[in-house]
Length: 204
Image (cartoon, rainbow, N blue to C red; front, side, top):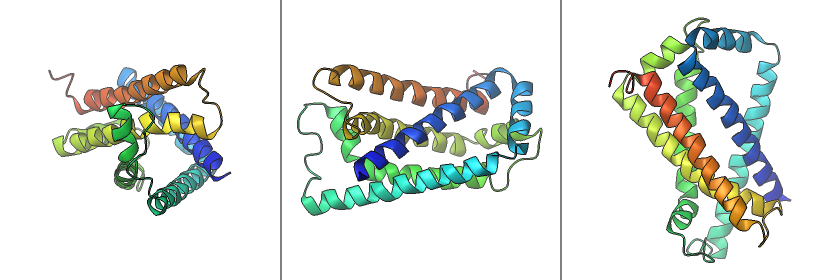
């Protein structure tokens, strides 16, 4: 049951990532429409409820992940996380999950502190984000966050399918390919948005 909740909470957070990325892509394509979208979203009465649900799901995912890591350590599973395949990147991503998760959590706290507490006034969401990313330190930090996200997704998507019972010998290759492709596309999308909003591409 714990594995199912962990996998389900992770997939819910992946869904949020997709929605978040689409909003950021809108900022890169149509800034005016993005500001209207951001203003309408922040003024909606249901947003606070959604944020509470998101926090609850994220907290559940983090808590269960810590529990899984501790169980793996106690059972001596840390040295052989991906023993069935000679896949360097899969092994690396699996072994880096505790560290990568901690990095993502640190990134999340800093990200929320910069852009959510306090939230930029209506009409200045994009300019605030651009000003933040104009700093090479901040943009580099965000790129590192995306790298940690990529490794987390690279391992987590396949792992979630196994935990939910969807991964079988017949479809494992397909699910693995789709999951890894999705991880790359989402991560590349965030890198692209970061580069565009920081002015790295427009100034080159």
